[in-house]
Image (cartoon, rainbow, N blue to C red; front, side):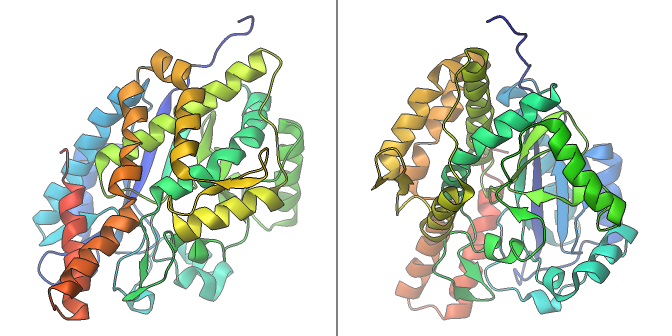
Amino acid sequence: MARQAPTFSIGIEEEYLLVDRDSLALREAPDEMMEACRAELEGQVSPEYLQCQIEIGTRVCANVTEARDDLKRLRASVAKHAKDYGLAPIAASCHPFASWKDQHHVNKDRYNDLRRDLAGVVRRMLICGMHVHVGIPDPDTRIDLVNQLSYFLPHLLAMSASSPFWQGEDTGLASYRLTVFDNLPRTGLPPQLGSWSEYERSVQALVDIGVIEDSSKIWWDLRPSARFPTIEARICDVQPRLEDTLSLAALIQCLTRMLWRLKARNQRWRQYDNFLIGENRWRAQRYGVSGGLIDFGLGEIVGFDALMDEMIELIAEDAQFLGCEAEVERARLILSNGTPADRQRAVYQDSIQAEKPKEEALRDVVRHLVNSFHDGL
């Protein structure tokens, strides 16, 4: 290829909820616990909006193998320090039975400003996500790849869905998280932009008016990072299991490289209007991998098994180049084992079938999430 290839480095951010090890209800993180995590993990851990949340971020990693080592260390450290205070972390986008009305936000200027500016909308933000960064140094290339990668956002959401329950009720959705997050401004699918300069002009227009301070207040499903020379995929629910996080990260990294390969050969993925991609986004949010997505070329709904085969074939060269063939192939287990949302529902139904009360069945779901957090650590 004539042009210089990016490194396609990756970084992963995850948000966790903290639960009481006995009651399995949400608990606020003690200051002492946060200080212990900071002392061990330095700049890789921080509070999130709510006091019952904690966020971690890997270092810049060359590949998924490096990301696994770092993420394993981060998860293990948070679990260790949480245990000292009778707590346990879970990596699910919604707690099965907690109420947002009982939660309090962290007393920091950034979060106080959010509470003031977004009012009742932000109060419901009892949700967690995962973000995957892929290194793309050239700004215009970042915009071009964001435009094309948007097509695959519903696929990633469908596989990652981990939030079927909300305030003790089965919502019927695989990812209820997005119904909460989409109430915020500047969320959803990214607009189709012509260039980096067009993106900067749009952001600057809001900055000049005083609506936002900078591009970190743009929360699209996929965006050029506000802080790093990366594209940042934000569509995914957070994953209870470490290996599922890594499979999704590998897919995002490989899809990005595949689209860059096309660009380097003066080819590109067909871009569809957000109206159409949004329909698939809704299908992913509602059904996870069980309902299929629309193939706009064929003009029909295609089952996710066929979509997975197509995606893995598309990125086979990239997975080999990036050394993540096993992680990409492992994504097929999401079809055979179910999404995290499917697994939570199965635990709940097994408990109901065992004639446990609804409240205890929901606690069984949280126990399952606590155990899943430690898988692979």
